[in-house]
Amino acid sequence: MNTHLDNKVFDAIAGEAKRQAEGLELIPSENYVSKNVLLANGSILTNKYSEGYPGRRYYGGQEFTDKIETLAIERVCQLFNCKFANVQPHSGAPANLAVYSALLEPGDTILGMDLSHGGHLTHGHPMTLPAKIYKFVTYKMKDPETGEIDYDNLRAMALEHKPKIILAGFSAYSRSLDYKKFVEIAKEVGAITVADMAHIAGLIAGKALRNPFDDGFDVITSTTHKTLRGPRGGIILTRESEEIAKKIDKAIFPGIQGGPHMHTIAAKAVAFGEAMTPAYQEYCQQVLKNAKAMEAVFHREKIRMIGGGTDNHLILADVFGSLGVTGKEAQTVLDEVGITLNMNSIAGDTRKPLDPSGIRFGTPAITTRGFKEADCARVAELLIETLRNKANSLKANARPDEDGFRDDEAKKKIIKAEIQALAEQFPIPESFV
Ligand SMILES: *Cc1c(COP(=O)(O)O)cnc(C)c1O
Image 1 (tube, helix red, strand yellow):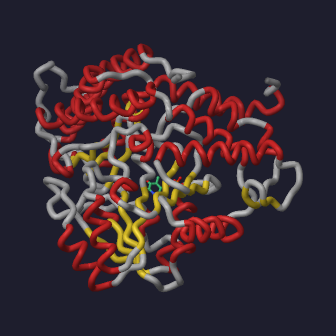
Image 2 (tube, rainbow, N blue to C red):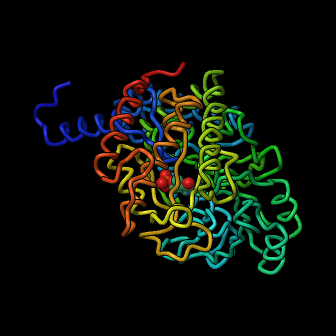
Image 3 (spheres, rainbow, N blue to C red):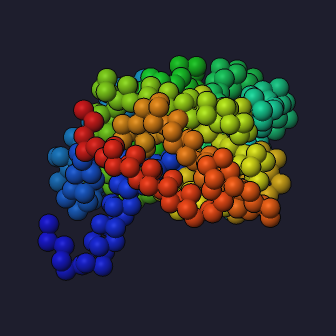
């Protein structure tokens, strides 16, 4: 590739590639895509306008784009066992906005998971457009120590507020939901059930986690770039109602989007194809096993986990409560040793969102690199060791720990070296099938 004309951009891309190769990526919404996904995403399809849907476009020259979009739709419907799919959403947030605008009038009510208990920004954060258009009411966990949703309260809220949509789904919650209960309650009040599976869609496609459609959910929205291991993008799936599916198509185009990104749709089709393979199903099982291995270390080391542990790919830990290190301090010091994760508010957090009590991390990306249970347990140990070291250095009367280290920096160097060695042992693969 002739990149010399724009070294500024390509040098920065090369730097990012190196960063991705050398560090350990524990942000649970990130992953590594295959070379084929990259090739499709970087293809000449970006040159093409295809407003509309296969067979009914507003521009000519759609012989190949129609094939590609149809293939993406067929594959994703097979993966999730549903009748209709819209593969055009540019990302997860516009997918959710499109569903709201398809099924609601301004001022209508949505009942979703409270943001402080794991819900996503697009589920009613006051700074978002949806929150300005629709009324959001929320349900919560009954007890943050077990993570169980308070279904009695969910039902009471539904009866009181008569929402048109009941929304299941989260970005910082580690337990399984009882989808049947959501559907029962929605039936009682005549609400449509929408599952925002952005984080766990891949694990559902890979048959490692339960599919909300099997319990009667009406609609699923998702990103395609998290556990699903595709390009950055979104999808909206409808189980069986053609009426709902048609409204959603109109809400995406011309409702909130113009021309579809055909290069991204081609990359989605490639990722969906990969997700149909036995190798991908094995990957999903390993993601869960690896999260369990990290959970075991956190239990053993008595670090509090919100929800008491994990049923999926992520863990939310109360590092401030357990170690006296804030989420922001943890994120920063872990970055310094080569572990990337994010700070996160926890249920009932007394600290502010920009320096909360928790950290959130997960196993999708390191599992793609080939990490198994023992490797993940070691990562969890190194993570905790780094935070203990930080906690010690924060204490006024710092005493040397068992290893005889008092100095924050010396120990950090040793940890960083081990993390780099681990990362080198597991190069980022180019193909999964
Ligand atoms: C990530 C996420 C989104 C938003 O996806 P973007 O692609 O960042 O717009 C929406 N909902 C949930 C639950 C998510 O985790």
